[in-house]
Image (cartoon, rainbow, N blue to C red):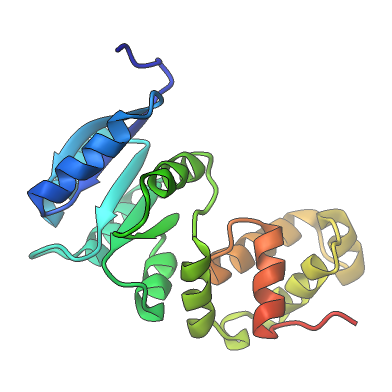
Length: 211
């Protein structure tokens, strides 16, 4: 079956052969996703990413030799627009926190369903984050108000109040461009894909309080 010209290209980086077969099989069932390469270790994954420049890298965190965390850090350092979905056997707070802080756009445990895998890839391809509820809960365990600067906390409070960027700028007496920078930083640090998730996350963890 012919693939559409605008298909999402994916690079698989997974050291277990059978796992790669399973991932490839799931992705082959989606008409808009095309696997263009497979790597069995971190160094091979880095080389293939540089050569192929896939839309999305699907990356196992536990790789022999060069770890998935190192691959993620190096890819993001070289290619700021790299979209990476990481896979892990664990859902501990430290793994989620390190992955998000290192630049991962999505996080899945290896027991995720095929539909979750598809959703993660298509979501991050749209420059959004994909963090399932369990990952958000784990991330919440590692994120505290001390991770945000005082100004970012003020911006987060405004976000939870439903203020637009213009309204935040007027309220804090700063430019809209500065607001956008702070909003991006807040979402990045909290691992939230959008303002709604940031609001839910903030209220759950008591980072801000609505009056």
